[in-house]
Amino acid sequence: MARMHVPTRLRWSDLDAYGHVNNAEMLRLLEEARIAAFWATEHASEEQGTAVLDARPGSNTVTVIARQEVEYLVPIPYMRQPLDIQLWLGRLGGSSIEVCYEVCSPLGVEPFVMYTRAATTIVLLDSETMRPRRLTDQERAVWTPYLEEPVAFTKRH
Image (cartoon, rainbow, N blue to C red):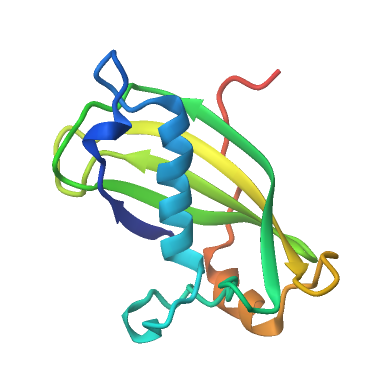
């Protein structure tokens, strides 16, 4: 089972009046981890090998979120060490991917705590036509090793 581990720092402003990470800020944390894992930048040599999606301004690809589901298991308090956000792919479609997440306590910190499970479906669009575009052979080859069962949410209706 291959997963990406993206250390993601909290900001003091991520907390709400109850002293834990606000639910809306969780979506931002997931976005930060997703961007670090999959989106290419000018500094490609410093990036993870999975960061092959070029969705920068002026590129041929635009990405849109089609669906998000988040299950909050335990409130996340402020901590200085970065959270360990584990990512994998629950599905590689023709023009979409399902990114799965487990937001966990920082690596090496005991006891281990899983705070959140989540999944995001992303659709890749051709920037000129704004129509879905197929995953490239390179994207599929790089991401296939991270394909495993989707998130098993505990409270499904």
